[in-house]
Every structure is written in structure tokens, then in C-alpha cells.
Image (cartoon, rainbow, N blue to C red; front, side, top):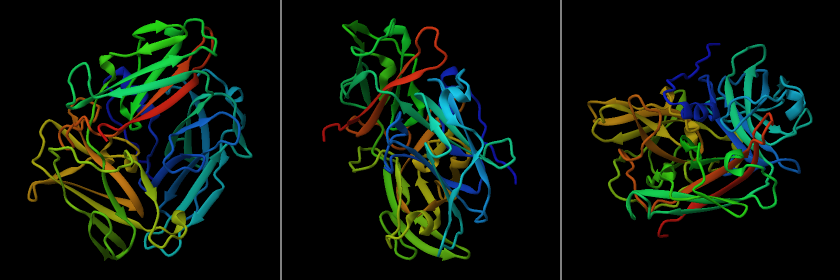
Length: 415
């Protein structure tokens, strides 16, 4: 089977870690890769060390014939590069175990097998905090067909986060600025200003994450990060939404449903460029697999060939991408939109499983790796966004970065 690995240029050192972090599938027949914590569909990929906590990785294989998949787990530092730890240092168990849990689809036009895996399980248990990459292989192959990324937390420090649209570059306009304090009063840190490593993400996006931050000043047992221009983010707009729940009846923002042998097709209403803030109760890029019949969503939900269209003049100097959890946040060729000169619109078609979806359009300028919202979505200070702060600790002489703090906040604008 041909392996289609997405490879694109790494132009800046800090983007290397963003790309290394990405969850994603690398062959055409794997779809709907998800990383969930403790059974919550809208969870962050961050799980507490120990206790009754677990990470579940799931995906569908459109081959519909059983494939023996195996997995390996690699411990990573804050930059998502492999740490110096040996397998026995970070896990009990062995790499190369088989993914045992799979269910064939039933009553669907597009046939598939649904695979799932929980960590920890009877074969593998994780022993230390930090970042982890779980890579999936077809048994006997050396190249991964998918990768799932998650973090394991040992909470040692407190994090207080605030977000303001009154920023150091504009006031109630198009940006939001993050500030946060790190309290280590109950945790021993010899040199907190150099040993504690913050990473800040907006809506779980890693293409525009911020790292390499230095504290603005120190208080008693507290690092203060404020008035830092690196922590000013374009505010964007609320995510666009649609639902595909029924084979015959168009649901939210679906223009038409029809069967074209051998599959069903769903046509999302044609989108337009946004020039104003659009209030909506979105889920900041997530999606939720479900169907109208309220039956087993994992194995009885249909796949639809889903058509997206954005009516806008062609934008020179770069490419436009469909973006959200439905693309695993990846800015790669598979999710790059093509411009239809006759219809004057960008178009893309993807097979998507029944459910409720958030998405947006990001423009990437030639020679860059960060997606921009301005061209299609606009940037408006009122936008409700999520900001997450990770705090890693590398004690002097240690061999890996501990994840000792994580917190997130929703900025609600004027709502």
C-alpha cells in the first residue's frame, strides 16, 4: 500500500516543534483521527499522571478489511523532540503492541473499520509527565501511518491567565493579548526564570503557538508574564459550523444531500468572506461524531463526500486551507483549497463522518507556515477564543522536561 506522507518546508526553528506536535494521518484510507481524554469529546489532549485517567486514540480505516495495526509511544521534551529517556524510564510495558479493539461499520454506504486504543491499558502504563507521541504502524512496516500527540501532567505549579482586547498594539480592535502568572510556592525550583518553560496556544492551534518566553518580572514565588508583544494574537472570528446527520434531509447549513453511486454527498452552503464579527456559539474548531438515529456513532455513522465552497476573489501570494479539528489542525496539501476560475470560488471536497463540525479558512503566505485569519474570517476583538498555557520544568542536570502546569481560559469578549 502506498504511503502518502505530507512533507513541507520548515523555515523557522520554532515551527519545527509545532510540526512535530501535530496529530494526523499519513495515508488516504485513514480518517477521523481523534485524541480524547477520560471519554470527553471536547477535551484537551492533556491527562493527569496516575489515577483513573486515560487517553483514547481512535480512527477509521476505509479499507474495511482487518489490518493488524501496532503502536509505539515516544516521550518528548517541551519542543516535541524525543527526550533522552529510555523506554523503561517512561513506561511500563513494551512498544510494538497490537491495537486490539476494532469494530466493522454496519449499514453504511462507505464501509470502514473503527479502531480505538486506550492509554494506559493492560500492556502499557506511563510513568512520567511530559509530551508523548503515539505512532501507528501497519504491522511489519517501518513508516507510521498516523500519529497522535498528547501530554501527561503532574500538577506542581499554579497558573492564572487573563486575556484582554486592550492590547499593546491596539484597543478593542482586532487582537487579544494574553497575560499569565506562574506560582511555584509549593514546588522547589532553583532557577525558575530559566528552568520553567512556558508554551501558549490559541484554540489548540500549533502553527501559531508561542514559546521561548521570558518573564516580565518576578514576584515572591511567582513569574509574571505580561505586556509581552509575543503574546498578542489576531482575534479571528467565531468558527463556522454545520451538521451532517441524515442521509436525505439537509441539516444545519447543508444546502443539499444526494446519493451519487456509490456514496452520499453533502454540500455545505457556499461561504463568503467575513467583513464583520459574526456571533455564534461555536466550539472553537472541534467536531462531534453523531447521527440522527442516535445509534452507535462510531460504527453506524455514515461517511459523506462533503463539499466546501468559499466565494471570494482569488488571493495572490499564498494558499488557502480548510482548518479545524476536522483536519487535525494541519496546513498540508490534503486540506489546501483549489480556486475555480469559472465559479470564482475556492473549493475542497473531503470524506467526513456524520456529526457536528466547526471549521475556518486560513491563508498561508508563500514562504510562511502560520495560517492567517484576516483574509477570509477577519479579526475582531469580540471573538470568543480559548488560550492554553503549558509550563514545563527542566531541572538542572535532568534528562527530560516535566510538564508541571497546564491551564486554559476562554476569552468571552463583550458577551
